[in-house]
Amino acid sequence: MGLDVVMGAVGTAVSSPWFYLVLFAVAALDGFFPVVPSESLLITAGVYAASGRPELVWVVVAAALGAFAGDHVSFVLGRGSGGRLVRGLRAGTRRHAVFGWARRTMDERGGLILVVARYVPGGRTAVTLTMGAVGYRARSFALFAAVAAVSWGLYGAVLGYAGGVAFEDEPLKGVAVGLGLALSVTAVAEAVRFARRRRSRDRLRSRDGRVVSGV
Image (cartoon, rainbow, N blue to C red):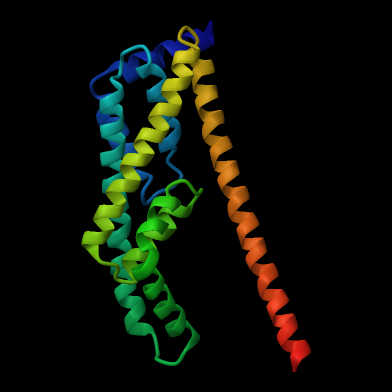
């Protein structure tokens, strides 16, 4: 009975027009305060959207706008700290070289990194802060932040919606299915990232070994 009361309260909360504002605020906070569970809230909203309240389109819009705003807050924070960092760097030092490398990397592949980092645990805030710190172009950042935010909003809401459709009369199971799907996608992405990183290390070791043997 206690669980029924809790789920009833959740259902009432997500059906309120104010819920969209809450979802926006949580998604925004998650951009620079990553302990806020924005993805869980988005998936839960998607589950209940399967029954018509809240509306799926507005769930995606609120989540995407919040994520977009949060990314920009993180970007501005990074830009502010980046200015102090640059002034403190000395030419010829390792930190100066690393900062230069980061700037070049963001110029070349920054947009792709931003979109992909949206689905990497802890990656979103790290990348947006770094892009601000290295002086990445604000207009380009806004473009790729919009792509990342909209894709994330659709991704989380649709996962939740799928769980809601599968368990229309049991929203708790729907939430569990949505979260399980999200965790599975994250696990696969992390496994691929780990495999690529390991292959890169193996290639470097192999190349270094050939150089040493040739010497």
